[in-house]
Image (tube, rainbow, N blue to C red; front, side, top):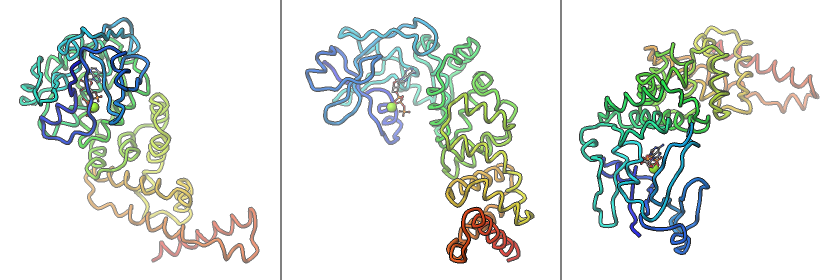
Length: 368
Ligand code: ATP
Ligand code: MG
């Protein structure tokens, strides 16, 4: 049995980037061999094992053949006679199809190193077109490595266009699609991800709601520049869309709750935030109430971060509204309920009295 380091770990070491997770490939072994060595099997679909001590993933060399639509439509063939070259050829990009053995010898049958040097994201073989997820993966790698000067090779972009036209992208599950989008959003230049999707006509298929709003990418880039959290980036991207589109998009992609909430609230309340300094105390109070700042202050902070990134995207460098609203939140949150309880207020009357106190506090805040 031969064990190789493969994929991202080899690529990122050659690029001089930090290697976080290591994928291992085992050639010349059977499932029984692995179990005898104490590896723990994972995954029902193909033979992947966890190392008994390190917990890292070890996959048996395999070949695969397309047998139907979508990701489920693959037949895998893992056996001790599958060679390193046969395993590597089914991978997406040449830069991801390199292997390294324990001595540090590089195995590079598909010229991945040359493509790394040329800064090219190039598919390994025509079988690339068999898994539509690769469109999203390539766009994500393009976003990640844009600062290093990487581009998608012309013929690879051609295959991606072919996949977009085939309708296969629609066979991807929401979970797999969102996972790629989420990872892309968290890259340093998420804008490139969407630009590549646009260039291969996948944006139109997967995220048609975004097509008419290319300017939102500027807000997203600002959010990434400030290393803001995922929900903030998502909210920046969706902010100018009609509410119905935001809702539909979130439902279709089954996005996490925080992403749904913040994208909806941001699109609904952005205009008010922009006018914050002119808002009457009652409207300020309603805005704080909408965000439930008494229980969830972080969500309002995230909203303000999104508003600031959107303003910066529009060329506005000084967004005083954010500090002002933060002050308003602090003032409203500082109102103490205890004296009201001591004064004998209960139930609905207590709620009213508290609201009144907060209103007066915000009035004073406005005047200060
Ligand atoms: P990352 O740094 O994002 O983890 P990675 O290249 O290690 O990048 P993984 O998703 O961990 O990506 O996959 C490991 C390797 O498996 C890839 O480098 C690639 O060779 C192969 N691979 C993963 N997904 C696919 C796919 N959908 N099609 C073809 N090859 C794939
Ligand atoms: Mg990896």
